[in-house]
Amino acid sequence: MFQQDNTIMKPLNRQFAPKSVMPEKVIQFGEGNFLRAFVDWIIWNMDQKTDFNGSVVVVQPIEKGMVEMLNGQDCLYHVNLQGRENGKPVNTLERIDVISRALNPYTQNAAFMALADQPEIRFVISNTTEAGIAFDPACKLEDAPASSYPGKLVQLLYRRYQTFNGDPAKGLIIFPCELIFLNGHVLKDCIEKYIDLWNLGSDFKKWFEESCGVYATLVDRIVPGFPRNEIAQIQEKICYRDNLVVQAENFHLWVIEAPREVAREFPADKAGLHVLFVPSEEPYHKRKVTLLNGPHTVLSPVAFLSGVNIVRDACQHEVISQYIHKVQFDELMQTLDLPMEELEKFATDVLERFDNPYVDHQVTSIMLNSFPKYQTRDLPGLKTYLQRKGDLPKGLVFGLAAIITYYKGGKRADGTEIVPNDDPKIVSLLKGLWATGNTQMVTVGVLGAEFIWQEDLNKIPGLADLVRQYLDLIQHLGMLEAVKSIL
Image (cartoon, rainbow, N blue to C red; front, side, top):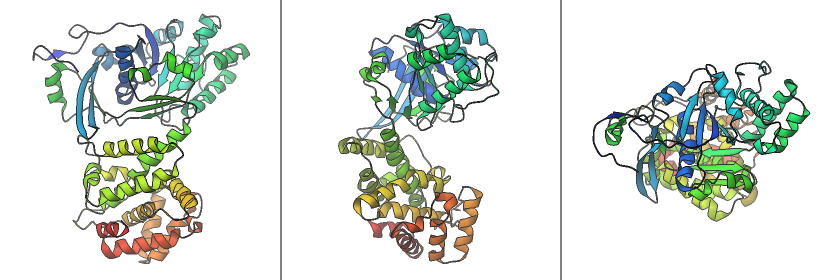
């Protein structure tokens, strides 16, 4: 935290605000809110609290972006972290000065390629959206630049290999942050395809494989972005005209599938940050999907059909909070293989994040594409629970019945319209099934829809009977009373 000496509003640039000058060690593909509130905030903390002493060069991954805006503020901006910690509200403002400059490779290609010649560059970090890590065979080595992110990266790596004559000490450590499971494995595969497509030779391929590391990572921080509603108050508080303020929750987690020697070079854990270097990212990916996304998916229809619109209000509701706790601790947590103490801490943190006093997270926004979400986030836990306990997890099954009920449409008790938003084929199927007025037909039809589940869920012992029972219960009692009855 910092304080200004006066209340005059100044432009935010190096003329009016101090800015650190450090060696450029990181190339960052992406300039959006997430990277600035997560990765750059982490590196800024490392600079403050360890001997990392490095700055970041931002590269705009597509033709249109924010580098001009960033450079207009000399790459200075504030991060506003909000949330709860140990039950108490947190609301901080910090000025981040870790980005040295920002480049557009489409208009500054020579400067972009010259990054490969800087001996102190050691890391490449990216968040180019899920679509960004893709192999495009139309890309050529001589393009200025290649259109795909992996193509640009190979152009840079090949130039570096040539500049330093294949020096193994000049390899790069690469951390993709795109939301793809095992993103590092996918990116490495794309890089190797370009090496083959462009005939860059076995010596370069050997240098890449032995001297560079592409590591899978899992990132976790909710970043709402630019605080439109509060920007005037924030600028008054900081006394700067900052048009790049980025708001994020205070929780952060970065899991990196890399050996300890990489952690020594990137000492985020020494800065007291929640950055884990682990042998396998998979159990952490599974933990996040199961304990963060899993409860979100089932609490939303239960809350909405009980007349509750905001996730935080659901967490504070006398009945729904018990339902969320049951699903989280008694059911989903029992299906994972990490140490129970670690799972309890993560599960508790998740519920604290849901209860964020600063974010009005609408449950209807989570309801988008509920059936595919249930299939990836909750169904694996349902099956594992049944396998381990010999019984169906009632909270998770009730959540499925709640989703099916939500897709019936119509109106809520208070007159609010219920508008399911999903694949038209799914919406049409549910509409037709509910038109029969027969919950047995609805149950069998939904569970048997293999285009949703890639299997027939009617074959799971006892599932159809319990889903139908809960559908009848919800129709008869209404959602809130039905929830009470299963608790």
